[in-house]
Image: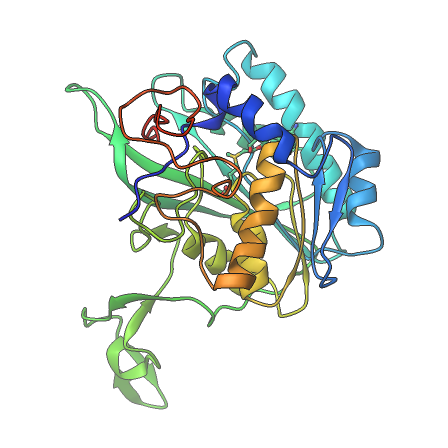
Length: 333
Ligand SMILES: C[S@@+](CC[C@H](N)C(=O)[O-])C[C@H]1O[C@@H](n2cnc3c(N)ncnc32)[C@H](O)[C@@H]1O
């Protein structure tokens, strides 16, 4: 297997400097997909005019938002500042969504800090004109913890609705076999149990997802340099359940472009943005790479391999030059 990963791009200023000249979008610019399906903007999610320009006359029926929520990104922001900031992109999202639409938000709950920001975010959302529908937990394979607490292995996903949007209840079955008998029900005088009544051999995805592998360097979909990539399977699950083919989907925090790629694969149109030109470029390249090679990511390679020479293995974080230097192994979060 190739061993040519980029280090975390949020904490590698030297690499950022090296990659920026290869990024086609400058702040404020929007990439229009030559195939006419998607748009990627180098935009601030809290700028209503910029997001209005990204969305144009489209009417997204689904928003999947995955804002930065780790402590590193918001070290200097108080929780109140974070919530005020969140309210801004939430309101913009609501204003551009269709009359009947779904809003999903991935958010962390720091068990060393009163489960923030999830706790205050949920309270803030109670003031917004959307209905709280579900609270999904996805199980990570890696986690963090101490000897004196349960290891934190969960990722939280909040599901809200505006109006009465589509929910394709039959769309998402897991690979987990249906083995438990029970849930007896009488229909027309005949008592049946769930195995007899069910149409599928596997169980439907509920609000606890234990069947999705967290992305790591051996997986084809891995995009090295991206420190917060969501598994494609989780995004596809949301897209299938809460939209139909050719619908428009919004994601204001693109990063590795997981929503963009899911939209491409599932024949939806994606309107996505990231404030960072490097992540915009990565997202665009991810969809281009898929179109050209049918690949979901670069596994343990990276999206800028044609411009940045192959690094040599010796453990340094400095930008690779021919014959010298290796970017650090992707930091696991
Ligand atoms: C948690 S990551 C999103 C991960 C993404 N769902 C994926 O699967 O790759 C958050 C992203 O939000 C971007 N970001 C931070 N502040 C932003 C802002 N004000 N507007 C738009 N994007 C922002 C960061 O650059 C980062 O790429």
